[in-house]
Image: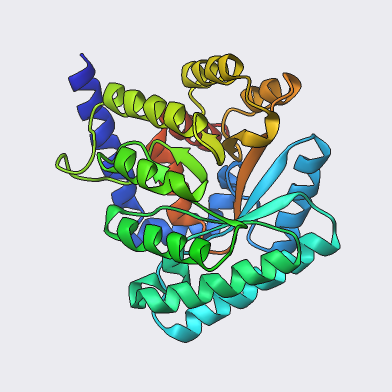
Length: 313
């Protein structure tokens, strides 16, 4: 049964991720999608819209990880423009005294054009964040970028930058080894299950295998020095994680729960009300369509919500 369900989910994910490249659908969604339900998952297209959402979320006792939507860039000048945008975001967050860190993709900073370029660009943003007492997390993208991302993270830490973190994906078979190799750095890590389509050779395909590896990564990380962000909407895994935290007597500053904006808001509130630190990953920007497709592909309930919105109109 699990194999059949996994096959159906893989087909749905593949179809939705493929739809991200459909030009006709892109045009329709960029014209109408925000009004048809995308705004549940994306905090608008402008910085001002985003900041209003951050204020609202902060007022509910929840922190934010800000994400400017976009991935690969075609030229160095495009990556430089992204750097300036993130510097501007950091200054606006500081001026408004908002509780929001930064989460970014290295391909948005030119990783596809070369690792030195991405390193220089993210170093500039991390330095700006340090001056403003803020933090930058480098997201993990497709497996082709895993080595480069981890190398850049190690380089920044070796240079003395302690306000930077990265991400490990539980569906990659290599992630336990990567975690253990990072532990001497006392790393700040976000642990996720993973959202990209990867081959059987490098990634677990069954949900049960991904879940098992995810819990193993959580247990290893929590038992080691550093900071662990547990990024999941899986209630069972959250409760198992809380049991580990309570057994170890971990202080609140060692971990937090992270979730996506618009996904399982009641669970977010319940964790907050139980006294746990909660942070929402909130994206914004004009390039929101590929992000939306990944959110719909990750969880059928997201797709059903979106289709329900269309049906009700």
